[in-house]
Length: 90
Image (tube, rainbow, N blue to C red; front, side, top):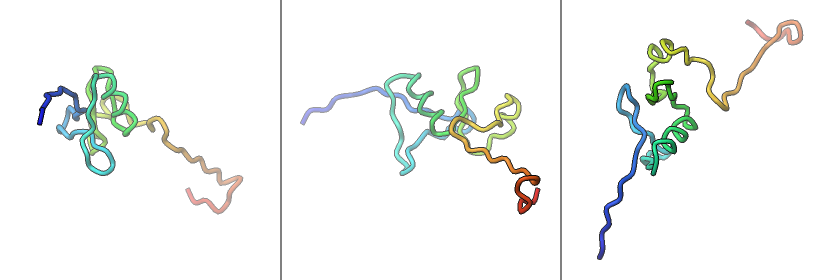
């Protein structure tokens, strides 16, 4: 049986060290840093201007500091108007 060593990258949160995982809990491995950043962003991680990765596990103070609390790509936004929908309580 032959064995081969392969080098890959994982995306890890720069605040807590949490590693990016698939929804079923498996670590995600990448060939390049850019692939890791792009994939982390699709899993709702924040990629800060300085290149740090921040997982969505409660780092609100850091994200507020960087002004990154707006919805990420793919987020759904609802706007309610009491003039057109009187059933809505604001």
